[in-house]
Image (cartoon, helix red, strand yellow):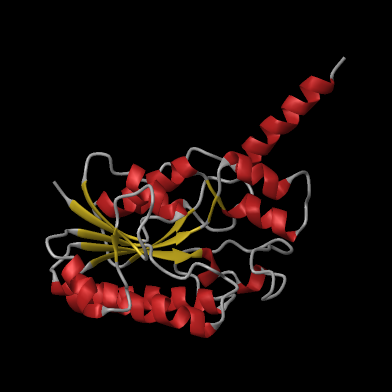
Amino acid sequence: MTKIAITGASGNVGRQAIEAFPDHDLALFSHSESADLDTTPIEISDRETFVDALEGQDVLIHLAANPSPRAEWDEVSGPNVEGVYNAYAAAVENDLERVVFASSNHAVNMDNTVSPIRPESTVGNPDVIRPDSPPAPDTYYGVTKVFGEAMGHYYATRHGLDVVSLRIGWLLTRDELREEVADRDGAGERYARAMWLSPGDCRRVIRAAATESLRRTPLTAHGISRNAERFLSLSETMLELGYQPRDDAAEVLADDEAGRDGLEAP
């Protein structure tokens, strides 16, 4: 049975990743102890500790990072740069088969944002972004994700490691999506409808990234739901990883609208 290590296991995406592998042997790591999860605390900026933590593992799903698009450079450079190098170095040191790196839509979203103070926004009619489109980070956080993708390319090419850089969208429950949109149609609401990643689709895409055979490495893939208003291409993720997203932000919101109309009908 494949042994999978998950860093950042106590985060929102980490918890979905855990649920994605009920049939695997998991080693869970988090920045600090969790009250409701059996995780091992790890400081990802400590290379020796990282190397020791991955002993005996087959796959690393590296989710640990400072996740804030609004963070300043000094806040992200340690965990999101040095920590990523340590992740890949530890993977090679332990002869792992694959690393799934949690990249982000923020690595390619500069041309579509309102401003650096509103990175979660979409303006105009964005062009389709494909995994091989040029990087366009919208924040320092986005810059670190471009770095992580480049590091994955280096390790895949130089060391023969299977690497999937998964550009994760905006993980929200259906209720959280409804709250974010709430009948508005501004730049933030358009972003939410385009970038939504449902919990179910999150589990599906992470499992695929960790377990599907790769025809090529490294692979960059977009991790969002099949949203009607998406501009991150899903074709490559579906083709290369066999990902079959089931949810669509527009359908969730349309169901709400239909429900309200039904209540208001005479």
